[in-house]
Length: 139
Image (tube, rainbow, N blue to C red; front, side):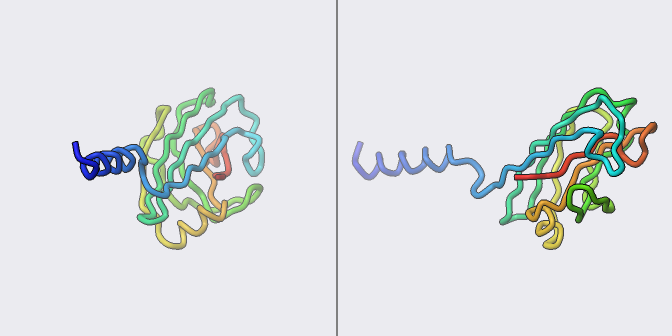
């Protein structure tokens, strides 16, 4: 092999293993204590998020357990800091079973709020229609 071929192969391998360029990793830890007002619940959950600022694509996997009953809905809410409530910003479809994965393309305003830490995830149940567990999205 020539040096040029080896350099090309090495560059190709580096690009292949680099993964998505500039994706931001975010997370949320969900429980009843984070609700506003707090909810007494043994349920817990986590969310692993990837956000690509170039395309404004947000991808997530939310895992939860111990809810008082089946999840009736789940959403990203915002803009709101921890301890404050806000309306639905991005729905999380098919949240009735855990884990739930999905993605959405955000508007400029939604992207700015997400990056500023002003989004939270709320999982709703029949017993807690305002949300049983909640967690603020952080980097």
